[in-house]
Image (cartoon, rainbow, N blue to C red; front, side, top):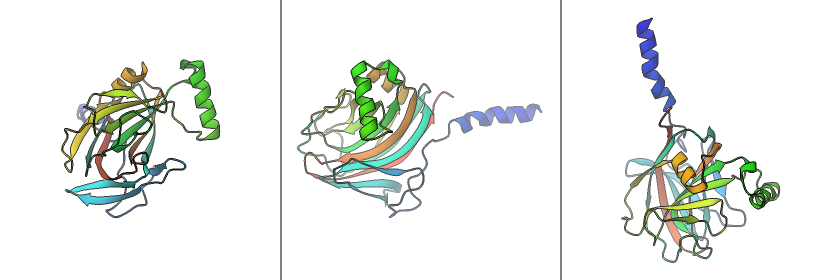
Length: 237
């Protein structure tokens, strides 16, 4: 019995630290996604081309955008107060020339990762609550209350952050800037609870999803970006 209990105790952390994100597709060249992955496009904007490719020994999501915007969403329903660690690898072929961080006219990024967050509506200011309710009624019933947006920028240094030019409910954070070599893989790891608290003052009630995306609709430029090895784990079960 003691041996059995010891084995269960040793195995428990491994089970609890499982990756909550499953691979995006079965093999290279596919553009139909394994459940629950689904495309995340923006109404009235041209969507990018998305496919799975083998590159540098990685099974990667490739996004090609030519005056386009969109990504690939992995929906979640996880308690936001847990110590979730999100890691991934990404690379871009080139930076965008005309993009401007956190501005409406230049709101394009060669690669970006969104983390969708939920907060109780009664914790928000009245006008913010009303805007979210209207947006959910007329546009998207699943619209998140808040979003962390990690970006690869063409001008700003890592660590730069600001609210989106479109909404105060999106916090933009630069992870890679112009000093980062292109056509090389970079690895990221983020403490989602800590980032959410820093951005919005408290931990979210839920994590609703992760989106790997790119956009060039404002600048009209062309880009190719890659994402690989997405992992979401609870670091302190």
